[in-house]
Image (tube, rainbow, N blue to C red):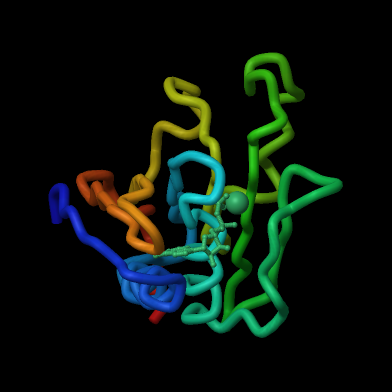
Length: 152
Ligand code: ADP
Ligand code: MG
C-alpha cells in the first residue's frame, strides 16, 4: 500500500478505519497519527486498539506521555507528544516502555524528523473537511517490523 486518501463522515467511521488499519499491524509496529486538535487522531487509535483486543476505554494520555493497554497477546501503546518540546531534549529511554518488540505503538503529534520515529509502519494524517467529515491520508509505504507475525 502506498498512499491512500479516504473520507469519513463521523467518528464511528473513523473508528472503523482504525480497525481496518489494525489488520495490517504486527508486534513492533509504530503508527504515526498526525493532524490538528480535534481532527480525530484519538478516535482512530481507539478503533484500532479495540480491534487489536483492547477492552479498557482508550482516552488521551493526560498525566504521562503515553498509555499502555493489554491486548490479545501484545501490548498496545498510545502516546501523545503534544506537550513535548522535542524528543532530543528528552531522556533517550522515554519511548522504551512504549515502542519495540511485542508492542504496537500509536503516536499522536510525532515530531517530524526524530530518528526514534523514523521506522513507522504507517503514517495517518487526519484533517477537518467540513462538519463531521474528515479527510484521512494513509501512507503505508513504511516497512513492517521484522520477525513478528501479524497481530490478527
Ligand atoms: P484528536 O485526538 O485529533 O485531538 P479526537 O479524536 O480526540 O481528536 O476528537 C475528535 C472529535 O471530533 C471527537 O469529539 C469526535 O466525536 C469528533 N468527530 C466528528 N466527526 C468525526 C470524524 N469523522 N472522525 C473522527 N472524529 C470526529
Ligand atoms: Mg488526541
